[in-house]
Image (tube, rainbow, N blue to C red; front, side):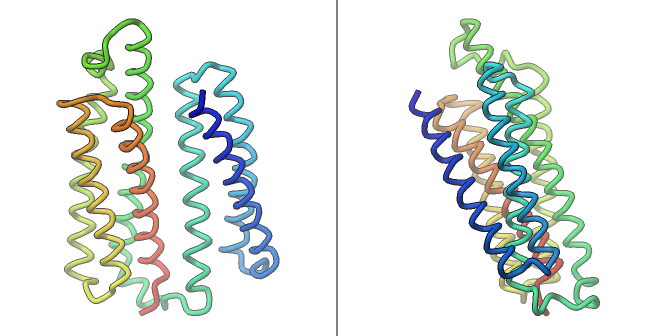
Amino acid sequence: MWTEYLNRVLGVTVGILIFATFVSAWRHHRRTAKIFWPTLAALLLVGFQGWLGGVVVQQELAAWLVTIHMVVALVIVSLLLYSTVYAFFAQGAATRLHGESRRPLARTALVLIAITLLQVILGTQVREGIDEAMTSGIDRLNALSAVGHFDIWHRELALVVIAATAVLALLVWTRHAHEVALTRASLVVVALVGLQVLLGLSMAYLALTPSAQVAHLTASSLLLGAETIVFLLARWLPS
């Protein structure tokens, strides 16, 4: 199938790019632990991810393996964001005093990351439940109703994500509105949460199309990345 072939091509391309990133980190930043070690970890994990992808195919897309495969991919992205963002501020990161003033924001962002990751895991289970329902003969329009508790938990946790995002935005706009990088990153988080809600509603009440499912999963990955950037900026953005 062309999607599987494209996935493998993109996987190889990503592996090459991560290897090139590691080489650059080794050449220029091997004495900077916050750049070198996350990059090395990302390189090792991308090798594990390639092996795991083969296992997923061999096990005929077992739900728990697909979930692990997705989570590892998100961890790799987070590690690369960590090293990349720190590379911008390695020579002038925020002072301890300024970092203290952003501690509530950093903690809120970290909690939001954890909640969103759990939401992604539940979403993966919902996706697998839909596929299983369709395989058993249930039509696409009624497949979501056959998922059961995972869909209910997924929807309820979405409300928690919205609430946590509102707290994050409130913190930024009331305490750090003068810091342009933080306000822009928080706006991206808010926009992606809004997009996720719209995509979720469209799939639940309009049409559960494959394109909407892919867009929903892609937006969740981008959301985790944006939340990670807010967290890292809260820690390292100079005053």
